[in-house]
Amino acid sequence: MLDIQAIRADFPILTQTVNGKPLVYFDNAATSQKPKVVIDAISNYYNTINANIHRGVHTLSQLATDAYEISRQKIQKHINAKHSFEVLFTSGTTHGINLVASGFGQFIKAGDEIMISAIEHHSNIVPWQMLCERTGANLVVIPMNDKGELIIEEFEKLLSERTKLVSVNHISNALGTINPIKHIIDKAHAVGAAIFIDGAQAAPHLAIDVQALDCDFYAFSGHKMCGPTGTGILYGKEEWLNKLPPYQGGGEMIKEVTFAKTTYADLPHKFEAGTPNIAGGIVLGTAVDYLNSIGLDNIQAYEHELLEYGTQKLLEIEGLTIVGTSAHKTSVISFNLDGIHPYDVGTIVDKMGIAVRTGHHCTQPIMDAFCIPGTIRASFAFYNTKEEIDALVTAVLKAQRMLG
Ligand code: PMP
Image 1 (cartoon, helix red, strand yellow):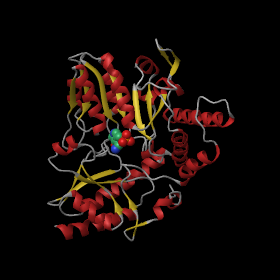
Image 2 (cartoon, protein in one colour):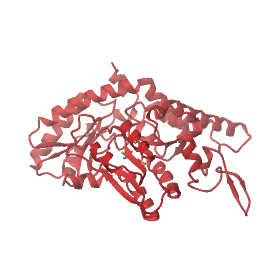
Image 3 (spheres, helix red, strand yellow):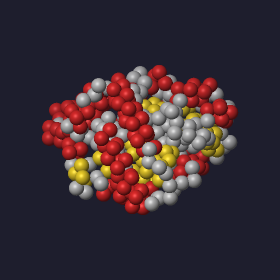
Image 4 (cartoon, protein in one colour):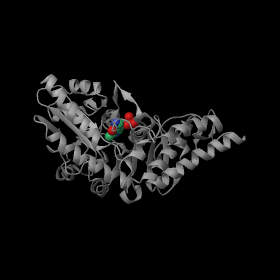
């Protein structure tokens, strides 16, 4: 059993009032709040060891380099990557997807297929569309059913020797659906396709084992898992990272530069041009330590309780429909009230101190498929409580009375 009150005390922001009411933060799928250890670690870095990394012989540079590389190893262990050089620091999931999509063109020819799914975030759609435009490849979309689940039989039918890469999310940010990614990975490999998993919504909630999954790439964002903004990880299998060309050219990513020719650095530096977000990378390790001190299994179990409680309580409201009703969901509830625009509900509940997300959640094709302009999305983290869910229900009822 988690001591939620003790956990809440780790998050300074949660003691705030917003619009005169205690803050209820239910926008965790957009970004998580940060515990004090993470906030303190940022100022500790700048107060004590700030220096550029991988270049200086001076003590501070070595201390900063060590801290950065120790963080990489921590994250390697956390996701069970085989080598630390398979763990690339990025600015977030979007960066990781673009890094692979930009270099993947050399494995693609006109008529080949890149497969994504109907429930992707825009950042797992647009970079692949751009790749298709550059190469003449076709974008193929795995359809979903009316619960917001991928139709796996259709996926299997769509796979062929033309499929060169499959990229799907582990968990949908708009619907909360947890995809059967192990099955998807195995099927993609069976036709010789590479497989990319967008783990932005999974890393904050589940233990991830990239070797057990056997995925080729797995990307996630630090800011959604108690870490700083502007941080993220791209895991790539050694053989793929060696085959892919560098993403950006510049300092740090080279072995030797002459005007005639440049040779590139070994992994992971080949993909880490320029001065990185040093403080962010180090402190992402602090965030991982923090999550592990609570335990991702404990987090998952408690958040599931919140999901069940919230689903039951919200469904008691007449005229409320939940969008995304898979039995395999993380702690995201997307919903609508009959005849009321999601934005209006979001504005009223904000007046009561409750932060929810309204709109299309960067998943316009999902909204189009459900023929809705958007949803109201409450996404729970392990520091949320059932009492906060009760406050949301009260606020939604009030919004319905005012707007209905
Ligand atoms: N994929 C999914 C499923 C997401 O939820 C998000 C963030 N909302 C992203 C990708 C993009 O993440 P970031 O903005 O941190 O790069």
